Amino acid sequence: MFCNKCGNQIPEGVQFCAGCGAPTSAAEAPPQAQQPFAQQPYPPPYPQQPYPPQPYPPQYQQPYYAPPPEPDVPNKGLNVLSFFIPLVGFILYATSHQNTPIKAKAALKMSIIGMCVGVGFGVLCGVLGVVIPLAMGGGW
Image (cartoon, one colour):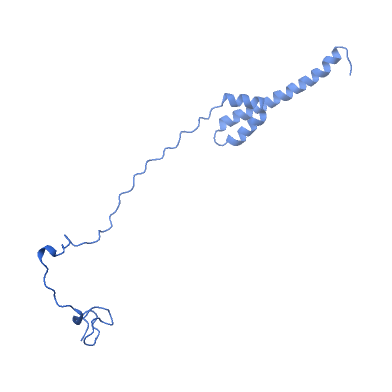
């Protein structure tokens, strides 16, 4: 006796093929009596086949809108602050000269002017502090 699937020789009375595991004609059960109509299982309405892969449309992506750039105009408040505290002007220039060069240069300019005015005022006060007492007739 030979296997119907793989063709290997199998001994008589064996229910399954040793080569492929397929059931032999000896393993087939005798046909059963047909069940009454009400007890028969429903056949599937159509053969179940896997769906072929569907190409998905590209996902909608909302376009990215960058925020509007910061206007590069000198800020009066920062310029006044840079004038009275020159270190603030130097820090503002160092941190923003690449993004807003006009605003940074204005802050640097005001801090340099403020520093020069401060040094000039200090020299003037020093000179007046020496000259006025001498002019009043006082000495050291």
